[in-house]
Length: 432
Image 1 (cartoon, rainbow, N blue to C red):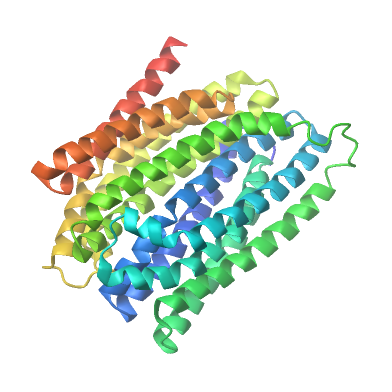
Image 2: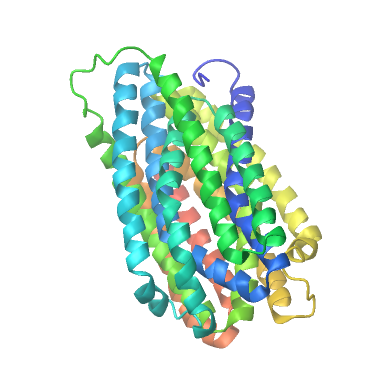
């Protein structure tokens, strides 16, 4: 889809809705695994699964950094009609991301023990975590390739095809999850294998479709095959650094939770999972705007960029109000999908923590909207700086307040960190 022409609101809505669905379905891999394991195995198995997923957070954040930079660069090239250069760039990125992802797989496979020791994972679940992590780590290479391929398609304005592929893959994952865990009794290993098989299918279909799209963009007549690699690294390195530090910070906070035992691990996991689910529409709208802004800046249409930004803030604010109401109304029923004991520690903590995170819907919109503009302008150092400020505040406040307020201090620290980051971003935007 060419986002440089036509009505701004209509183009943004048509482009962003599939992104929201894709992000939801990506999140649904974890949701499906957690719900099936919690329902058909045990709550202890849920803590094993959540611990493994938390450990892999660094890898997933790295993937987001690579994908975000790819979307911006491809969007700029597509908007400026530099099709030959775009084609070479996509192929180069896919080769590079494959090599990086296999290296990360090896690190997780052979370094699991010291990682679990560092995170203070409870001893009663540590051996199960060690036996499970290599399967999920094996899914990292196809996940990375699928993510960058989807980012490239999004940069070229195609968000619908990845949505259809992701939908089919997720439905397959749910079916395989139920069969492996509930019917054949393979437990959490069955859930891991179901996710691995599903993401392999998604990667294959996405790459095949991307190959067909690239064939239509012209011959390889670019003089320098790696002419955009330097530009990509200038975008990717700050994004990757930011995401890496954010994920490490999240692990430091997870360490506080792990010290409190399995019940709090489950409650924290469920609350954070549902919070991420509620945030998806807000984050996805900002992602859609990133591509819109990148294409229009590449086409030198700055006025469309400004009008799109104003529309994003208006629509996003209404969306945040709806999400806040939805959280208040549906927090308990959603938590009950995972935790059946409403009087238990895990359930009560999950509900309280989820409600405390509601202000972050508005703060994430305020921050990510400006970050999207900075990314499209290729001023990645600006959003990296604000994100690091947010993380530092979150960790400092979390560790300082937790001894007095308990783990709810992490929710207050998250809100304070996002507030500081949003104020920093808007201060820079208005000053510039």
